[in-house]
Length: 121
Image 1 (cartoon, rainbow, N blue to C red):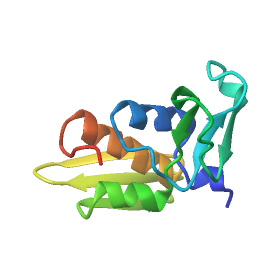
Image 2 (cartoon, helix red, strand yellow):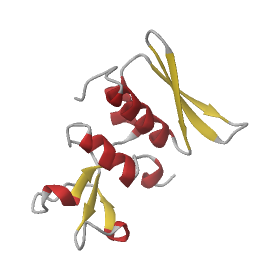
Image 3 (tube, one colour):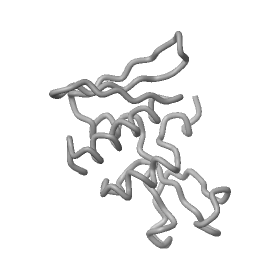
């Protein structure tokens, strides 16, 4: 399995940063040429501190996303639908899905942050 399938994609990484999630992860999306163009982004294993803030986003791993989601979160592979489902159970059950576990977890974290069910860490 490639590392790109184990981290959140660029669009989800952007949204998580916008929602105030601390930019500290094992991997990062970096743009060394033109941050306005999506085709110049690269996944790297170490943050380049010389890049401006708008040219880097944390590419959170499945494990990092799981830590942020906490113990009320339940990932599940849906083989009949070829997708991951993320469920969160507090006072109500919420589900998000994605093509990868990282995508499902990222979408769930975004939902929980936008709806103020948890706070950014």
